Length: 245
Ligand code: LAC
Image (tube, rainbow, N blue to C red; front, side):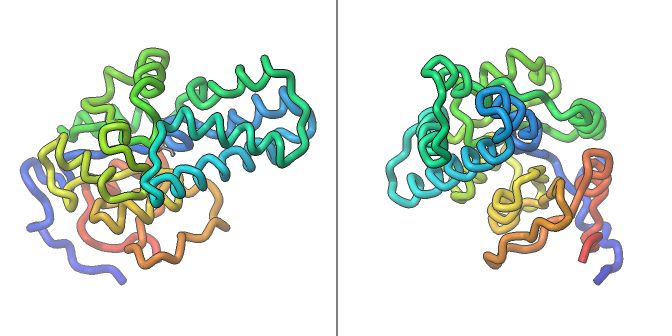
């Protein structure tokens, strides 16, 4: 239900948020390309292979956080790759597995991301990445893509040795920016990440690629459903009203 615009929600410069952080894999970087690499390695099974790999990657990251058994995301990604290969009965040459292991690092930047980041920065908003990715991979991605010029911060979970959606990870953004959670926007295409960030207290824009994907039923506040084009206004000019019900 729409609520009346409340000017008190807007801070200096009339903005609703002072910083916006982005998820990396599947958000700033397009995950769709993973299936292409997987298709080359296992013709006819690219989508199934990429989906299984990603699912195991996330599952292992959550298990490791709950178990207090952190290893960095590169390690988790290789474990998940090897498990997916075995589960699907794929017979890949060792050199193929080695090449695939760095596929996440080579994903392309979402085409509309640069314009969205530029708009946020021109509104005086601090911008950053907040990712499960390792510090090393994050540095490589930034060097390859040139995203550096559009970002103030590049934050890896390595600093807290836990994976999203653990609140300790989202807290990194508050600590680094000095901005309280309620004045931080968070952009992700991953529903589970949207749930974690909303539960932490960020204003979340969920770039839901498929309308049939349900929001995880875990008691988190509903995020706004966004597109790259709408996220600036959704987050920066946000007036407290709900845009999607
Ligand atoms: C990220 C992945 C897990 O944190 O989406 O970048």
